[in-house]
Structure formats: structure tokens, C-alpha cells
Length: 144
Length: 395
Image 1 (cartoon, rainbow over the protein chains, first blue to last red):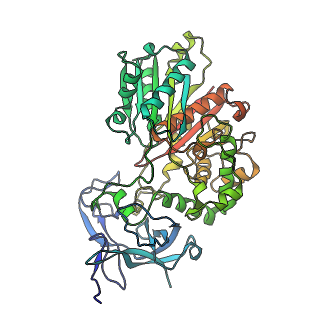
Image 2: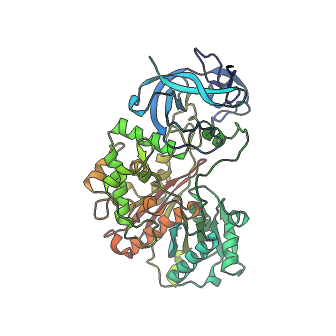
Image 3: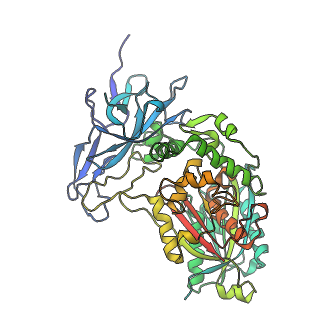
């Protein structure tokens, strides 16, 4: 049995370091505002006219702002396993970047295991597979 | 100079899943509003339509579509698209036309026919589109409602019973509204027995999508007085403000909030900002409000709105609910129409339907739903892409 190569579900949105992955964002060189997804042509801070950005790895830990789950299969472009397996979703506050980032929570963790304020870390996990590849994405996991 | 305009007439086609052309609903609502106002169609000099993006080209030019359907008579037209706030933006366009002196009396109308099933984004591989990204990652509309609801539970101590009580309240009063789609009363047990969709929200905590149409006739105060309707309810304020950077709450369809890391930037709630301008423009405060019609896309969201409208301290809306304050007969009734829980959302018509309800309430014509002594009402809604509105109607 061959093992499919791991590729990012969305190219360039996170590092592929499976032990300590980071989301990849940008930071405005003028005002320091972070952007995820990446912003690279104009700054959205209304008091900044910046147009130069540096690519940065965002903090890979944060705290739960809130959480929920998906009990029903989302429509395409989501690629669902058959049968569909519900998953939890967390909104995680990144202290340094002063922003909240959504993501699925790793398999095996449900809402009963989560609480607002709980520390979380970023990991990579399978989103879906196609013929050639295993497509991975960022997910949140309660910190050990 | 007064910035107020008079509401001479209102009309609604009943909400449902009728499957007819949206133009039929709009015409029915407009004719009811014209008859209610006692204004002949030929006297309307401006038709302000709220667009629907689900019904093809006629929906994009809804103002003209309705004018043609009612019979071309030369009136100027306009069409507004502002997601859930489309109706309020169409109202604002008509008010501006009247206050500038360009016309005396205008029709504002919105109607929609909704497709069956999920509203899926366009296909392909399109990571530049936030709506595509979030669906690809498994984040649907109920996800956002679930996040807001869970946060209330963990931070403020709201319970599943509180959320169910919102549905029970709105279904009970909605059962007395002939224009509502759902007229069945439900118990807390019914809500608890419905399927979980996005923890902690169940199917009966989340509103459906519906067909419907609503229309409002507004005029200058002078025109109203000449008609002998100087005491008609008035539009005292319309807020359609956009958010300020940085967003505090993650909003559909985004995958993240703005970063508030830059110097001088604070994260702020958009929802809470919407009514502020309405209060300021009307020169009144939350203590003056008799009743509110708010956008209960979910049961928990009704509680958020009560706080955003400053009808309760942050985190305390459930206390009002538990005391019965937000029921008809209570201190500050919320969604006396039955709300989206009883109607389901018909986007371009929904903000106008809120104004129809407040108008009937302020005239004392709301029948079994009547809020005694109603003098001032406020609406609130929020949609995608920085669109939201709040309108104040007063006697």
C-alpha cells in the first residue's frame, strides 16, 4: 500500500512543518497590522497608506474565543468523508497579533472538551484526500 | 428643518415558500401599502427597490421591475443592494429624495423568492474568495451563529433553556401574525428534541429562508398634513453605518478578524455600533424605546441584539427574557411580530417588514400582538460585507 504525499489543501497558507506548523500571514511594514489571509498590496488600517508587507509566521498558540461544531455535511467545495463525521470548530485568539482565527478542531475532540479561554495550539491534519495526495490544513488542538 | 418623513402606508405579502415570481410578492405588498396610504399609484414620483440577487436581472433592478409591474407611469427609480440591510438602504434613498425636495411621496419595496437547500458558493479552486475558503474548510453559516451562542454561554452564563425560551416566545406571538410563515406554537421540549446543527444551536434555534414581500409609502410631513395624516408614524432615524477597523467579532464569511496590533487601533463590535447612530440621529436613547424588531437569525442572536441596542447591560439580556420583559405585555417587547423565527428570512423584504410591524404597533393596529402604549420602535439587522441597519420609528 502506498502512502500518498502530504500537500497543503490551500497552497501557501501555512508551513508544512508537521511538528510545529505556523499559519503564514503578512505584516504591514508601516503600521505593523497583521493579515491572515495574506494581504500584500494595500493596508486595511484606515490610518495607514502602507503598501509594503513582509511575510510572517503567526503565533501557533492562542486561547479559545469560542467554539461550535458541524453536525451536518457542508455543501461543496467541502469534500466530506462517507459517512460524514461531525467535527468541532474553534475561534482562537492570538495574543500577539490581536486577532481571532477560525479552524476545525482535531478529530476526537468535541465541544464538551472545549471552554472559552482554553489554550490551543496549531497542528496539521487531513482535510480530505484525492487520487494522488492527502490534502492537509491547519486545525486547532487543546494544548497538552 | 425636520429630517423626519411620514409613513403613510405599509403592506406585506405573507411569508412562505410559495415558489412564485418575486415580482408577485412585491406588487401585492405595494398595492396593499398604496391602499393603506390612500395614495394613487400615479402620484408616486420615486420607487426605491431593494434588490434580490437570486432572481436574475429583474432582481438587480428591483425598483424598475416593480415600477413596470405596477404600470410604468414615469416615476424615477432606484435599486439598493446592501445584503440584509437592503430595505433600510432603499428607505434611506427615498428619504433623501424627499428631504431634498425632489419628490413628495415615494414607494419603498423589497421582495424575494428563495431557492431550496443550501446556498453554495461558486465552484472551482478560488482561495482568493473568503466565501469559497470557509466552505472548503467546513465552515457554514450556522458555524458563526454557534460560535456567538457558545460564547454567551461560557462568558455570560446563558443556557440552552434561555435559547429555547426565545424560540417559544417568538413562536407564540408569531402564531398570532397572519403574515408569518410559521404559526405553530412550540414548547422548550420541542426545541430540545430538534436536531443539533451547530452546537449549542438546534434546528429550531436557527431561522429558515422564505419568500416574501414588504412595502412602505413615505412622504414629506407637509404632504402628510395635506392628506390629513399629520399624525402618521414618522421615520426618526436611519443608520446604515459600516464597521470600523478592527473587527472584534469574526464575521461571516471571514476566516479571521482584523488584527488590532497596530498602534491606535482598537477592536470594536460592529453590531453594537449600528444603533448608536440611529439613537444620535433621533435624539433619543434606549430608555425611550417601546419595542424592538431585531434580526434573530438564531435564538441566541436575539439576546446579543438586545444588548447591542442597549436595552440591557452587556451579558444581561437573558435576565430580561427570564423575567418576561421581552414578551408582549412585558417592559420592552422584542420581536412582537414573531421575528425571523416565525417568518424565515426573505433578505430584501426583511428590513422593510420590521418597519411594517413597528408602524402597525405605533398605530395600535397590531391586534393580538399589540404592545400597549407603543410610541417609539427600533429595528436592527446585520448582513454580510459590512452591511447593517437600524431604523427608529416614532409617533
